[in-house]
Length: 124
Image 1 (spheres, rainbow, N blue to C red):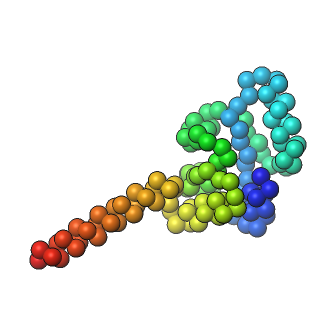
Image 2: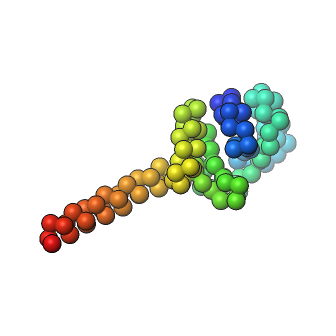
C-alpha cells in the first residue's frame, strides 16, 4: 500500500487510488476491514468491499491492481507486489496493453505476420 500511495503522489492528476477487498459477510469481517484500513493508513482513500467487483474483473489473486481509464474502461491489470509492478502496469496502459496475456498474444500475432511475410517473399 505504501508503494501505491507514493506512486499516486508522484503522478498527481494521472492516478486515483481506490482500494477494494472481496467482501464481508458479517460484522466481525467488517470490523477486520476497518482495522485493515486504519493499520495501512488508507482512510483518506475510497475503500470498496465487493465480491462482485473482483469477479467482474476476474481477479483471483491478491495483491492485484486494475487500471481503469477516465472513460471507465479497463486499461491494464495484473498482480502487484512492488513499485516496479505498478509502474509496469502504467506503462502497459500507456501502450494499450491490458495484461501480460495480451502482450504475449500480440507478440505471437506479430511473429506469425512476420513469418507469413517472410514466406511470401521467399515464394515470390
